[in-house]
Image (cartoon, rainbow, N blue to C red; front, side, top):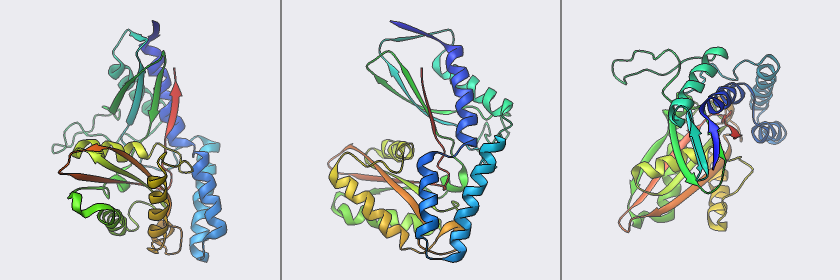
Length: 280
């Protein structure tokens, strides 16, 4: 049995908060750079260049890529041969979020009650999804989620008879309605299957995958490509300025579901699609 102290988790989480919010991931940067070469609109090419320039400034000065540093979302894999000593993992993660957002001068955007709206002051509590796996490590994936994009996400309980066409139509409809609001070019996470809550989680988790990865199933990998092509034909373009670069990537995650259901969730994300990983 391997022992990991809770303060190690807190330290790692605090570092992830700053890293994810201040440094653009390489897969996103490369996609934006490709867009400056393939985008047909002169105005939108300039927008893409400005997004890259913004990311460079953020990295050089270690300041946030975006003023909305998001609600803290975590996917944590806990090995069955790990014992956490001290505080619970949840307590340690929230301590790390509080430290990272405070020491890193990141905007605190969380209210303690959804209707009374009083700010918690340290961006806690985090939203944490746990998975228990074999091994002696803890893998922490942090994905801060801004609500300009989160607010444009959607979930629909389709009928099995709606089939593939129903899934495609719902994804395209959701992106079309989102328009310029999520700060495109977007990254789209799609969850299919499970229950209402499970498919929403899948869509969120899909956004933690690099956009140059593909679903392991050839069928769903092909669907990712098809949706990306369809979305980029909508003409929304970078920051809503029109053009051919509305979306940088579509990632799909699936799960078995009930014979009577076809749940589908679309989690819309901005061009930055921030996420960072630490393994303890």
